[in-house]
Image (cartoon, rainbow over all chains, first blue to last red; front, side):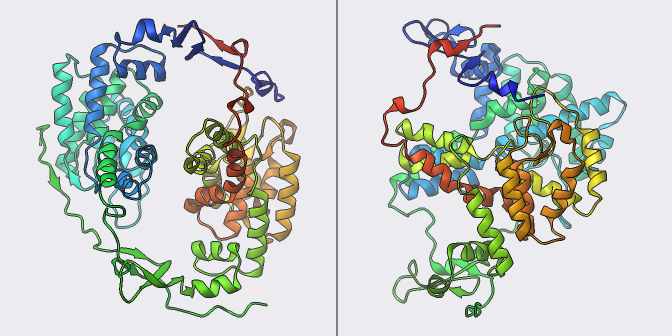
Length: 275
Length: 274
């Protein structure tokens, strides 16, 4: 093997996503943007097309839009939102504020960063279930693989939530799912069985990521596709938090006086004599 | 419980009322609690640090809590000079240059460059993963670890063969410049340290397939030899490599957009294979 795979790509782009042919058209995955998409397809249909190269149905795109609303609310105490607020307060650009918020949510604990873990779990869980394992056995087996610090509770991605137990967004999206005419697939059915079993034995519940990943796995999306589609998941709430702080006095968001920081380090000391 | 409906309840976590810092103590000024009259880093007065220390001393102090020993100072100096410029072909320089020539607000050039060096292939994610790999295996026989890596990671042929984060092929070859830098760093590294272990480990990788060092492997081993934790590794790599990326980007901020290639249509092939 040599470096030929890279040599053939030098100075040349070959794409199946599309591009701009000046004076001719702008192409998205085989569609002409101005002729086939603008005014005819929704933004979410186009977004999912660009990620997956497959044009989703309008109802599926509407489901995605509803799911984006759920993961982004304007509470500036939430970590990603607060970063939008802080950048707003120091008169940063809205793009920097929102970009920082989006990047902050690439987290193992919440937001799009937890998508892959949730999607991979439910795929794994269904495989085990088909081999005869009951939900409680699946939960025990999954928890046994978790390495946690002493004193902390192991969690399954998609089945616990910081700050609160339970997740109001699951119920809201169940209504959307039914209203749009989707049926529950095998991953989502199992996810709910795990949910009720967890609640009974571990006092934890399925969270929003657990619901979304199970539903979308049933719809044929891969964990990678979900992570890509949801990469900007939190931006709406960050927008709100940025805007409010940006309109306030400079430095006016949660200002910290010196004594608001508790110093826990070593006592004042002089520099050692250097050679 | 068989009902899907759940009650939403606060966990009532006990959050701290104050942010804690074991790094910085700030003494407020007498007439304004938001202003500082004295700042100390890990106990040292910043005014004294300004008189007696250089940048790398305080850089090391920030992350380790102590000033570096002479050996650590020398190793960090060598690593930071090596990483200060990953060159114009590195994705960090290219993302910075694309932003700059596109008239992006110059405030954003450096953050964009840093994002461009965050990847798991040749970037800071690979450094972090390589540090975790080395810390997990450095107590084991390098030969056995190498054999296990070869067994568990078949050669993909069509792209780089990465046997472990930081180790394998680089454009299906080995960079002579990287090897020279590694050899220099090896002279300043502890005899029983991670870089020496890794140097032994690569001798058991398939040399006929050009397997050996990748940039992340060298950086990871040196950072571990400096007692830096893997969770810090990606950020420290980003900081050390930022100056060159920013320099290569910002030079385009006052250049015409034509100074970076925009491929002609014949070199931009749109395939419609739907």
